[in-house]
Length: 238
Image (cartoon, rainbow, N blue to C red; front, top):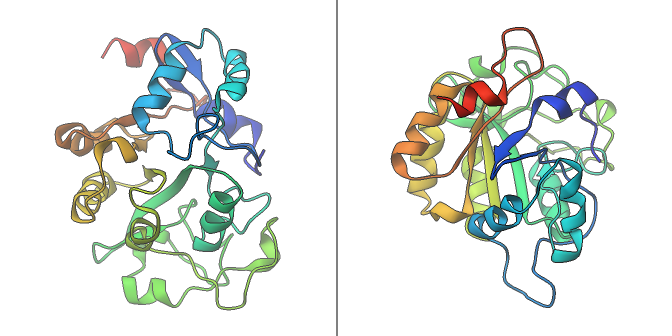
């Protein structure tokens, strides 16, 4: 498991195939079908998930090669949302990496979970207010991470770097974190030639999924347990 809180675990749940499936990672295993060197595509995951009748039923799929994706790059083991974390989690067997994506002030896309850079870097400020040049100067704060030792020059990456490294090799799940990020994510996926079955765009904001739906990329609507959050039934009715 990773460092996410119980509340956050409860808030990120996917309604699919009649099942409520919470997409969280484990630290080992592989999503390769047993005896195969071919990574699962989104279509393979859909088949597995469609046969799950309850949240706990997902764990019974492990023997069939199903595991959870590396949320934030598995930050309880590796430095959160960094290329190092993604490389290490993939090397450990993960074949689906999740990356929180903010639209920066000059149109670039930076990888950061929080609305500020305060927690995970040595700098401070609102994430969306940084330019790409300023983003390049950020340094990950190793003292505030639960992951393994962080090299002194480690910085939060751009989504473009993630796609360049992992595009069409593993499933990538960019989460659109702020207004406009959804359309920018889709534009970048297309620019890097990411196949429709090798990415899934997710967001807590329904409108940020519109561009992905129009472009034909699969989407995941996230919802929270906080007041006013839509329920799975309400989402299914839209």
